[in-house]
Length: 195
Image (tube, rainbow, N blue to C red; front, top):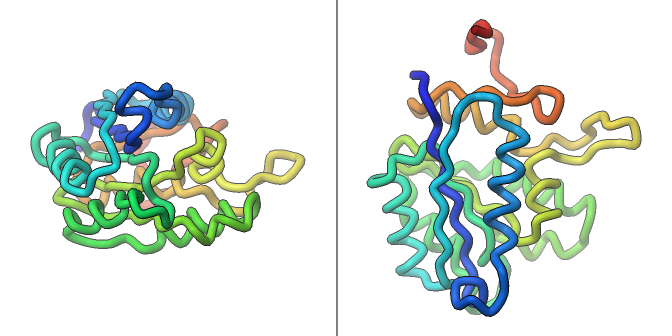
């Protein structure tokens, strides 16, 4: 399947949704994806409070009604009482993809010991991949790109390298990346020739 990918960008924050402060996570995700993707894509952004039912309903809307191929969330993945993004994500899932959460924590532990407090998950709902990303713009980029040494060589893989092939496998569009920034990994048999 080809065509433009639809990507849901969901910021979960009581204060940002109430206008107390500016949403930084959602715009950081959009900007980062703009650097990564060389194939056409459309963002579908939402900003909502930390509320289980609201998060669940918004994820369903983005996957089922908006037909997003990928939905990335930011915020609400810690241990605080109002942090319920993982619970809402698991509640709408058809399949859990535990490798995404495991790798996100692995990457973040390279930078901060409190990464073990993060409860991010990855799931599939229908033909959409849903990923819970961290709340801070710097951590969002680190999680997606991975850990690089001084020469720029990747020493711990970021999660985004696996995203395009996962979307292939669940019936979504063929997503291509700017390989200078982040190279999508696909088995040789799944790589399509460049146009």
